[in-house]
Image (tube, rainbow, N blue to C red; front, side, top):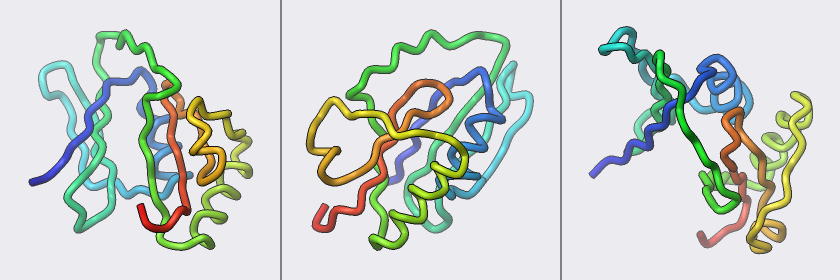
Length: 125
């Protein structure tokens, strides 16, 4: 089984910079003009999951909630600290998570669409 998480956006360039440039995901595909939609797939090669972001002439009606999270677990604590430094270098400040668990085990950020992204170094996930 494979997983794709798909979301519509109004700013594909900002999403690409956030998820590829800062978080380090790879562009594993793009598409143009599927109907009125264009987009890209981001993930890590040889994994059974990826994110899809699309744009069109329709504006999304997102209502992100503090508990709507994408959680990424790093393989090492060094990798975690490197990601936190990348976010800081881009001027992206952490946000306080609603769930206190993430304060103790991770750092939470907000993507360009207002959705929360958690970077965790906790072992035993």
